[in-house]
Length: 480
Image (cartoon, helix red, strand yellow):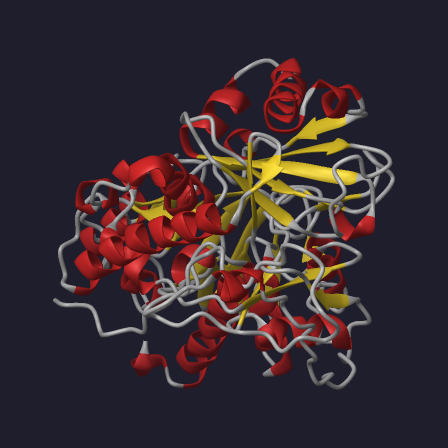
């Protein structure tokens, strides 16, 4: 079936800030026909969001063995689902295998002494606007950040012609992939690209590992084409992981409760955990498909082919941040800027600079490079930071590097990857994750959103959608 028509996406590097601009210039959005340097340099305005009312304490279900809704996974999707189920007046059990909430939204404050988002680090707009409002209502500081990105070549910022060539190359790559997807040709994205010239490796990195956590050979053109256009980004000064944890505070979460089996064979759903067995009328699986595919969580009787294939083909890719201290702002960069570089090899990266206005920076790596670094020795992360800084900015900058810490999401036992992207031929399978399976099984998570996959907002919205479906099953069982 041909995917529904969608507007052309704005290239990922649009609305970047380059040099200081005249006072309060109006932003100039790029158009589908022309991405000028003026558009590329226009600053992203801070985005105001109307605050919501104070979050009231939600109905809590502490130790009951029988509840109406069992929610497995206390990441953003599970938290959103539990909030909605509780607000609707139904009992729930929110189960989390690890010793913390948040899932792949995790903020650390111990390593560097400042908030370090180890997973999700931005809320993408417009899809994340409601989530940002919820964060502000909970007392967090949500701020607009510069859209990507500045471009550097050999230690120098690109000139006008290089900016225009870079932007045009990324735009050609995106258009080729989207055109194939919109036409229903579900192929590896790498196969539909034209000759991209000198900035081809950079375009491969931005459209593949940076956007999809996979090399383009493993990216479905249909899945890529359906991703919602992103018009802005917001950060949380306390960290997005801290924000998600704050939104979970009104809930009761059963931590260190690993689910082993979900049994759908009886009249009630039976969930066997490391702390005993629970029964319920509906179950929401708010865990990555990788956890199900690995056998860590078994579903009996087995999923029908439609859902089993979705679990196997909507796979998580590799995406990590190598965070490091660089005191004194030796690169002369603004807070929360992002830099791309002219790539010459597959070891491409993007730089998140002066995170939250601090001395903390991060190299973002994805795809094959992220897998290689995660599988290597811990000292490989520091070597990569020094090597890349030396290549792009010189040995003096590299010599100033302080502490270094790298995430390894493919090694996290309850994630087994960073975020999802459909394999070629599987672009239409996300829809299965939005349905009620077996009359009482629901899916939630960023993988369970057709257009906001790979984002915190997508995970949150999928949890709310699953909760609404669960309430519908409880009030009208035949609807499931």
